[in-house]
Length: 466
Image (cartoon, rainbow, N blue to C red):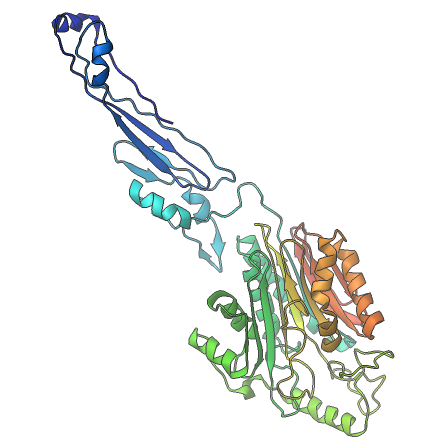
């Protein structure tokens, strides 16, 4: 908008100009400031000489200089900051900055991209496109975090350890969400806690391959951008979920395997460790028992059940019901995962595993494959699965479940349908956690137990049976 104005002389001054044959005028100044969405301010300056209209006036007179300033201010939706124009300093300031400074991410303040000092108008046009204001003013959602610690026949003597581990993961991840952190941050933190707990088959204490080493897989996915990072068959990283985060953030690629994944992680600051630091004596014993069962032709059907006529072996160690060579109830554990919804309405999912007991080196299961053991999309849901990996991969079960939510099925029902489909189609066993963008969730398993936990504004809940 441009406003032109002419300021005429007062009557007392007119006598001095009467009788002149020429009128002397100076240009009026018009200034318009228009704020557009999102904050791409454009200034228009117009100088219009009006002396050419003197001949049209019946009387000549002298007009004094005048300056009229027009300021147009348009508040944008959603509220992403406010700009004011200052005539004295000819700068733009940003009083909306405290909104950004109030957010805490990973224990530190999320700083505004603009300083508190005024910045030049010329610089504003170049920098406005880089401003990304958090959507906390109008569309804040209650955050939710769900974790699982594997689905299998958890013996009574291990129940307390499973629930304690799940609780620690919930507390760590949910604290990030309540401080304004993102769903991706919360999932990474929660899964890291589970990887560091030898109770679970992820990170230190994972199952051993047939070569006696630990090989780890993990995937992390951001439901807002659909960016994902995955690693597989890593042997020298303590926390594969953190390596997956580096891939998500730092690489144009999605998936790294083996030495390539380790080299990428090391190049971005992750320390490499000796594989022996991930191996426990408990797992060496389990490997020997698994070899003995295999030599005696006892199939591992912990997760497969009676319908497991399949071309791939099921995941994790055999149960005592089907394996008379062992009387140790603690000869199994399973994959971990988490899904989260943050206050900005974004979803994330992560899954991490040590794979199967006595697996061939180089074997990759469902956990780190997009759409199989893990998936997240703001337009559908976030999901993490656990259990027998090969059938989950064949059914692309994670994507199958989130697609049901996108079609209008409630997450609670979609989770039940996914596990039913897993069993009916391939005789598979496992568990699932599923979280929709509206905060509705579903959990299901067809194993005797699944360690799970939920954190919402109403508090924390954990359990071993749904």
